[in-house]
Image (cartoon, rainbow over all chains, first blue to last red):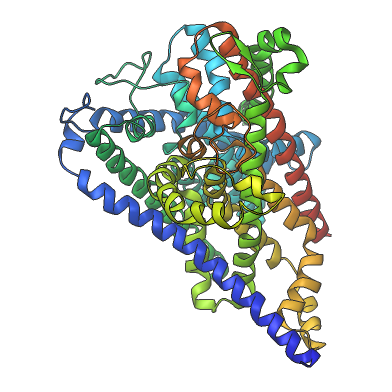
Length: 283
Length: 317
């Protein structure tokens, strides 16, 4: 075999392997979605949205869990997003390349990939131990802490994308930086910041581990922020590992709902970003 | 007129100060969160660490009845599952990145890239139930008997594949982790490959190199730091991943030589036992596990960030 054919064959083998790797990755996504749909559709019914989580053997739905998840995610974003946006504004507009900003950027990237279970333990130590009981408020707070790094990162990136001329024009009119930020930069970067919020919602709405130690779970309808509250991920966790068929069906239905919601959020965030980029390159 | 102007300016200056300090305090809050995590975990872990001393990390025993705890089994499980995950996910991620940057028809580039990223958005609990109800039975029926029969007989590595095929266990957890970190590794490597100047690649092709030779001799050396950074980022995820592992690891506090046996990891021990833990020492030992996990993942992720940053700076120059 000549050296040339050897090189060609080697090339072919490695390229084929890379194709196999890509197909495997796509197959995993397809397999997971297919499992969710085929198992989840059985459990889909109106009961899901009208009834509470049942005792084993009883008929029921996921209403309290859906409500709890929605409420805690919403509260988490309401607490976390302002912090993330303001901190991102500081990095993009005031701090820039100062040492403090560099350190904050670094720590934020570490927090972005830090295990969520550790945040759960932190909030447990911080709040649950002091108050003496699990609560929806503690759950929301742990979700808020998880939402901060995502919003901070996208806010800073999006503010940096605003053309410098707009900032200069505003400054030339005599506006102070706060006025420029609120009246010029935020409106210009609005859709980018919204994308960051969508990504943050997608990130926190499927989190399970931190809620285990903070909001725990509740079999019944509860709207008290100061009491344990049902939520979809923990219900899925408990029901899927239970030996009861009807609980497992509910877990699959819940899994399908949560995954579809998150994929929808991620896709819309990506569509908005793609539109922004198209707009940016057309300018 | 002049009076109004100066009043207006003073007011503006106050607003400016308020806004600036608001953004500054939000930014400092990020630092405080990390500091708070470290301090509160250390405080919660103190009773256990004071009681067991250094032997906490060297002992395998985990016995809630006699109130004796050692972290060796969870540490072992965490390290081994993550190593399996990396062994599978790094070559696969490299392959996907290679395919997306060099081979993929431009029309498919975006959809495939987005699909891989969507895999990263699937919550970990979904990987858990999929692993338990779909992957584990498949492994138990088709893969593990084959491994036991063919690899179990070999001297040396044979003892890694001994014992009955449970389906769940260290190996299954490693595979599920591999699927979970794959998108992170693939996406980082793709971004890193994209930073290689086209001129360098074209020079390679101009000399008559094949696609693979350009990848291996031009792209990889040029983006080495970024590749390692991406791998470390994936490793950080794998080490701290909780729910997916909790479903499929089997939760047994012991170290078995076989990869097919059930085990436990730091995060799955915490997730499983925390709400049921009675007694201060038990709870404190679990928090001490959390502190260990925090130290390990912080080191890995910080190293990864540092490497990726170095790469960015080099490009910016």
